Image (cartoon, rainbow, N blue to C red; front, side, top):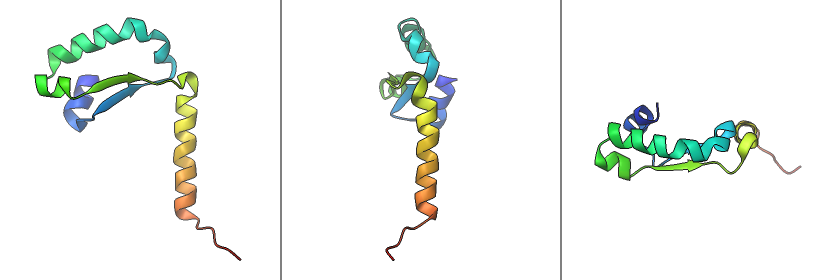
Length: 80
């Protein structure tokens, strides 16, 4: 899935978050090996795999950020 994401969107970084962060030590080597096998040298070297520091709060904070951004883009606050 990560290789397909990289080939499709070509991001500079892929951030893994939520509960998966707990398994960082077990995941980083297999992820790196699989991306090396399935991606060209250019794509593999230009992608950074990061693990979120927010742990279980990453999903809630991301959803909240989207809601707040949408609210302020739709509702302009004016001085009365």
